[in-house]
Length: 209
Length: 196
Image (cartoon, rainbow over all chains, first blue to last red; front, side):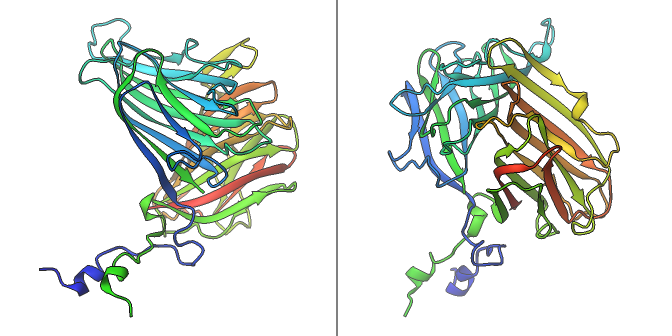
């Protein structure tokens, strides 16, 4: 049986050496949402324990094993800059690589810009995974970084990288980035598919002070 | 007297939960030429992580850049060889691109390494992103780095930047400096973390 002496020291102490460092500023898990047939997953400041304000300078969203109900939809993100809509104006880039499971397919591999998934001063949602397959074993994962969303002077930069099983049975590696071209604070972020529901998956929100 | 039930949870794990340990932070609120971290880079961590938030240049067309030091910040200029990939898209939808950008890579150069070029200085324009520097205290290997940023280009273009390379030295790196290639840093937040 474990003794108190053993238990008491059974942890690794913080490496920080000053009182201001200990416990401060680390990457903090703010909220984790597991989807189950949901149309949208939203992280709204002040709602359901979500903090999306100046508490943290940088936010990270990790989307894990996202599985769609529909065939080949786009997994997308939108940002709210006031009001109730996720319609902050954005200019973005999107490029990707892919490799088909069947190397006999031509072209089986490629890398390049994808103009179907970028935005130019658009209020639409930004695609962060294109053509996600909905075979039982297909899913997409990745992470999105959002910088300084509470700032009211500058545009709000974001970027991310996704990996997914495409509906055509190939792997995609996706790189996207851009800015919300608004000076209003971003106070909510929403994820959804272009069509159908999020059958399953987990989205985690972190903050870095 | 404290009881065991209280004591057992009275452990502050610092940044362990997220593996990021804050080391230093510089908030620029008035114009400054450079931001340097001259302490805290040593063998404590195998990985150092820098976040740049809303860095705004005084001058149009500015490249946010970095160099490292092996003498505690007395000088910055160690050989770097690097690669650069960019994607961009005009706000007016007049053009887009993704590919290698040779104008901002380095080949055995002691110049500052750009990590986002041509940022505009309109009131709302800036650059944000992060960079990882691996094992700077090593005296055996080159020092690898990876950086991802997004910036608002002076011509109203969103630019997503991927820079990577190595500091081609087996001397330990113990300081790093950030600056724009022209003008000053008007505002922004630079943070340095150690990663467990």
